[in-house]
Picture 1 (cartoon, rainbow, N blue to C red):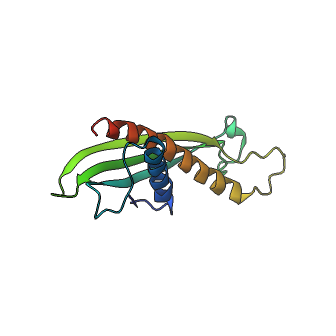
Picture 2: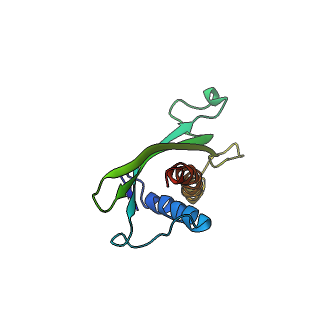
Picture 3: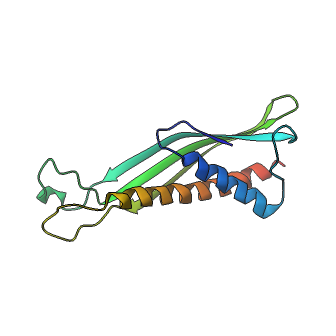
Length: 146
């Protein structure tokens, strides 16, 4: 259902699953094979931007230090409904979502390492949460025309 136009791997799965969940929960429309469906939903993940936010008091750190206090993720998605009989786009909209999450927090004066899996794991969880929020909004807008 979604095409990922970013470098982040497998993000389209979060959006596809979130939108399918919205339709399955509401029973307004059925998800079926495209050759039998009257319309097809097409989604495009246009942009994912991750902004690193520096900790307060970072002036105490050496100039080449790249610690982050938090990350802000911004995602942009295009969604459209295409009628299968004549391939005409009958509805389209753009969606934006963002969330902030904390970076790994090190409480020691001697900084050696942090768990690199934490950042990846939390980032994937944030992608999933943004997708759920955005697809809830998308579903609500889309079903206004159904």
